[in-house]
Image 1: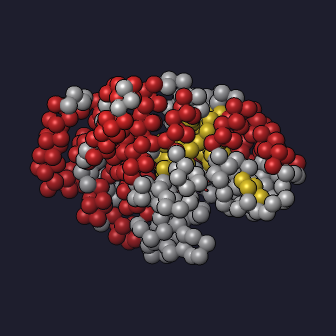
Image 2 (image 1 turned 60 degrees about the vertical axis):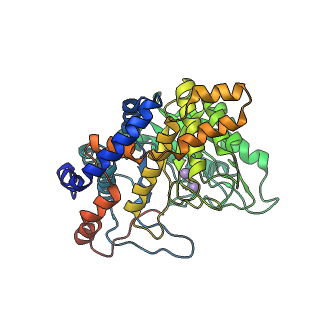
Image 3 (image 1 turned 90 degrees about the vertical axis):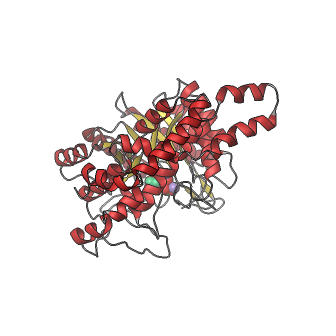
Length: 426
Ligand code: PSV
Ligand code: MN
Ligand code: MN
């Protein structure tokens, strides 16, 4: 292990005094306002976000990829990297695998490694958007929606294989994201494509263990630029309902057309008990996969406000599978993920500060100004001392990015792995 709690204990020392001062100041203020600070901190400690196995290396665009020194080149190394982030932040205690990019060679040893780092196996992701070596059928014209029965059957079998792999690791959910769609008007029949998709998903659903769930992701465009079969939350919701009670919609923040009211989608899905998973990222234009909270932090807060409302008021909705789904093109992937985790926790902590009772009263009185004041009072609170406290209590770093640099984590990784490693996957 490159870093451990003892390293962080030492590194935290110089920041302890100023952390304590700001925490005491904020704690007193929140206490006076009637907040249960200890309860908020417990909630922050319990909040764990999965890191996808494909996010530990430098990403890229179709114009090029600039690799980052010391990137992981095996699943073991990817899990070790998540271990580093988790040691620092204490909030990334899970990994989400993409199959076949990251099939474990030795299940026992990978489970032991993850367990030693306190990392659980979250949702497993299938891949029917690329043709695999030696595969009989091509997904060029679709997978679960393909007009070719043989291609559909191959894609269904792949998803069943992924469930089987996940089962051996202790995963409890399968995430299905399909690239299926069409690039030109007339290329495909919308109704046939959706019917095929529904019946393929039902076949996969049949193979789902009792305690598993199936998460159906939607996305309006890309790689198909005229139509996508599962284009929006309505389509995903329809398919989840058709499959059964263990099937849910998954919201990826980047998978919406500009200005979509994502918080309203989240709210309604939770009311219907059908929000199963969540992929965090941020975007300016489309599925940009930027660092969470880097572009639209207020939107993220409003989304968390609905998530918190739903977690309190919608027992019909299951616990959510949280995951970061971002790409790191120019930043150190580990630093970028740490920044994302910090933004997620910030938005969550701020949402926990919203006075829901006062908001309800203001809504009942049609006092629009007060409604806005309540939300913005929470949003404008600098909650970072609460997050620092949650991390510190668990043995993490007061300032994870600073500690990452002080402890020369990247330099050590480069020494250990060399300069020329390339992560597999995207
Ligand atoms: C493609 O848009 C994508 O980013 C989806 O969000 C999936 O979750 C991810 O790839 C992995 O399949
Ligand atoms: Mn996603
Ligand atoms: Mn995406």
